[in-house]
Length: 513
Image (cartoon, rainbow, N blue to C red; front, top):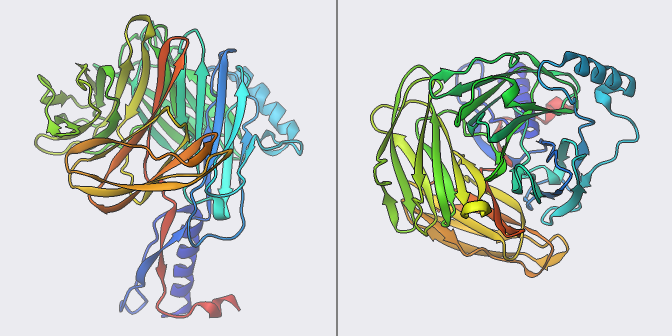
């Protein structure tokens, strides 16, 4: 094997270890044997962004950072979250405000940062959560990086209590990795909804973003959704009702990035039903799982969107504790290409937790989906959202759990699986504990959540797949807020803390000389 090919393989391995991208294998120049099987190594660096939590003066927000202990990591490293700087404050199309913000950033230095910037939150050690509280409406978006021993599986949760007003209740969201495309079925431009798409740019150069909206009849006419500039290290909340004059109950938001990258989340606030964050659906695909609908849900609305021109015909199944069942009257769902289909399933849960599983009736057509879940009755109703998600994979984590206000639902849609659930040490004290569970094929189980012994503060739950088929999971947080049983639901996708790096056939140490 010649030196050029060796250099290529070494470079790909280094790139994979740093970024977390899957590694490539390359045959040698003669076309003989390929590189050896890839080894699994911990990622060495990762980044997350958190949207500005609330515009309410009554908001109380907690940030929780956690990294599970991972073998094979470096002995050092750090994880910290910093303020993204003051928000652009501009609705889409307000270029003068954006120009003023850009001028301030230029005077402050690259990306608007100054030497006086201090982390909002800094991790202390893997295996133990760290929390930080913020009050009122002045909390900005946050950007963060983790490297070394803190990078693999780094998870940050933003949980906000809003005592009154539009969107009152419990609002929770996992801080997300920046990317270039996001789909949000389940948003709304209805008169009783105030929905924002939050864009956060973690990088040193501006990002340019397009926002498209789709409804029951196709694309909505938008006025200023194209070419939105998000300044470096900045957060930008875009009110959906400023992008279109059309009022529709169910809207799919498509965020695509022309240049740069952003984190994106939708904050959905209702005048009467509270509110929560709507996380992005998994990328368009033919089969979807929406995990962990609470057993006491009083209303469930499924929203599905087909991004392409082809129509999708889907089988709708509910994975319950006893097995897979068909919601009465909603055995199938037809989704026209480029349009939304929404169906109200009512109190389909009937006192049992469950997960919706969507599969093609005939040929597979890529779709995205989410459900809106309502708990409570009358003036005490509260809302949360569950998008179609990725499987737990090797490991997934949910943080900011409490001793009595946490529920964990796990579903195995296609084959029986065994999982291991670990409760970390508490943020203020306590020892980690683990339990294993078997989840039968086609069922959803609300497992007994382990609690750290001697718990003080909050803790993290880590779910690992031990054997069997793929599993999907979600965590529900509940709390009592002025007579309202407030709640929020977060999915647990694979944390992608490990990356495949190919082993070379020959000793590469000569390249270091």
